[in-house]
Length: 459
Image (cartoon, rainbow, N blue to C red; front, top):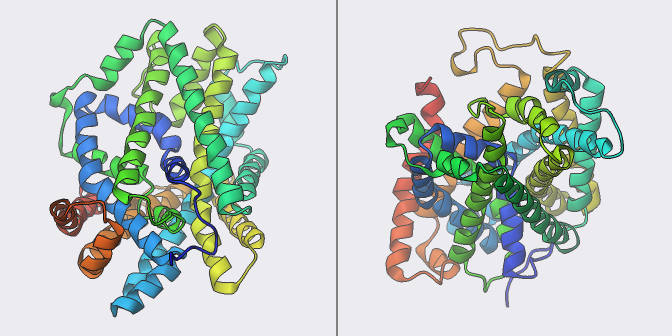
């Protein structure tokens, strides 16, 4: 008799794919991947990235999903059961704690940044009904960052949107949400790509992204590609382990893993084809990636282009949806743990985690205004001169996630019995399974270790 999760189960293979892709697709895909590709050799970087997906992303993704499906509980509890059954060290349970705490920390500042996208969506929506245009994007963005009350309010709105989904559970909440949000995300993205075609610069944008320039490839490029492959699939924070706990037994983990990786990469590339034609058309420097371009440079283009208000609304709505699908996966592991561990009702558990994330997120809010002068002293190595948000982001993204991913690979490759792997990965032939096990035992840990130590050895 198949074991099921007390939280519910995905109704189908497609439901899991949509949810896992929603977790993977976030704000970083919409801008960071295209920018990194263009700045690191275009098509050459894409090829290196795809290789890293195969050698790092997929092995660890499959490891997380199979561990989750076998345990059918939240990561901490699933690992507790598995460690007991295997007679392994209880230290391996720390994988679940690292992922769960990292998810809460990431959601705390991710929600603040997602609040920016909601704010700009509202600004462009109100312009459709006669509100004043954004004439000075730099001043508008600076004004938002300098207003702790407004930042806190949008942070709260986004957290309410997130908890509203998670509180309803797997079928009524997560699955219903991704069945609506992921098609909406793809429709928005394709609409923006079609608009980019009308600029007449799609060919230049495609060359900017895909034309290989091997002269720009360096050791740093490989580290960036590995880091992007790792982070873009939501690895190391146990979200995929949690989603795997709701995956029906008959679904092939390798097949859904490949599908999620391809969909995640496809979204990132489509985002580049949507954004860069506009960037090229208006002579905007694409090297100024990140918030500086999204919130201060692109609004200049939206003001000048035909139907720019509608385009701006669609663009920031796209960012908001991408952030939303990722945030619900960040909240789910800790919520599931509270439900299992202390018997708390799901709604209360989700509200408690949301409240904790909102309060911790105030540190990020204040880092832009009333705590802007608070910095790590000089002489502290890679963390020198970081503000509060940068410190939280560095600890969670650059330390906890790679460490969690490294431990997951080592646990799945060296501790978990081969019979369990064969049972969960039963669609793989013996030869492919042996290859996968070697990669997850040796190759993936070494590459993740390179990502983990890179901030300390590279400028």
